[in-house]
Image (cartoon, rainbow, N blue to C red):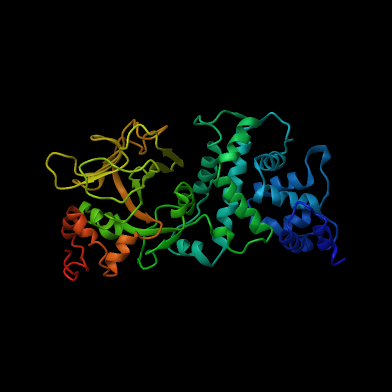
Length: 441
């Protein structure tokens, strides 16, 4: 009987050779070395690892529902649940979701509420798996106070599900054609599902951390006041360009570095693409991704990869409309132009407007043509800042590395950007490379 699961796996043609070996190992204990697995036995093994709702959904898929419910399932059905969720095509993934929700694949419509609860159960299970892992990237965030609070996890699932429709909120029912289209381009649900089911089936040891970036520069900060959630990091990181998703570099915190615009500017200039995250005193959390490095400039600039986002009370992302390039603006000590940071919109009507003076206040315009589907980010148009952070994303820019290492290159960043040099001086930030470089001919 000890080889039963191995023989069953070898006959399962939907699995690769490696998958046959790994799933045989997973199937053996839950089936008690028999050809079929009982629902009670599977729940005992998987139940502690997953959201209770997901446990019911997986039971629906594996053992059936209604009058056709069975007490056991065979190895092939057990393998289908894995394949459909980890590497299935849109139709297979839709079949899995429909069956999990107690629906047949040929049903023309499904209630949006059911889809939302399914997404919430996947998000909840993923965060639960993250928090239970005491090693690696997730633990670095957790030990600095980043949690996976239930309300934020639920908001993450809701945000994923809301992408099924252009309407916000989505309609009460979703057609199968809408579902198929959504699954063909929705990446976050696919990645979360891959991570959850790879972990359940024991096919990857590190996979449950891959949606989180590594925090760089955070561990050295004593008494760091975390105000965002693990769910928020997953949501924002999923919308960044893929090459930048592996690392977030801590640049600025209003709690740690003080409430000074010059200090803020001095710490974010020439640091590559970055994320600004703001919590206002009404509890709303929002921000924006700047796809280019911040540099003192009298004009708007940036790339269409830039986006704005909200994290609380809802998670949403507003991508570029292509209408204009007013993605980012930063200036200081000018008499005729705004001094501060603007992301989206225009002078006096920025989607995010953070004036240099008085620092600690801001506004979010009612409308913004720079970003598609935009809605005001803060609770009120004018807000007071409770917390403000900036994170560089991806690796440190090569030119910045060269400057810090004393490389000559074509001269320092400070040579190319005298305005940045002035900001650094005013911020009291030491320029280690100044005065030790060879003269540039």
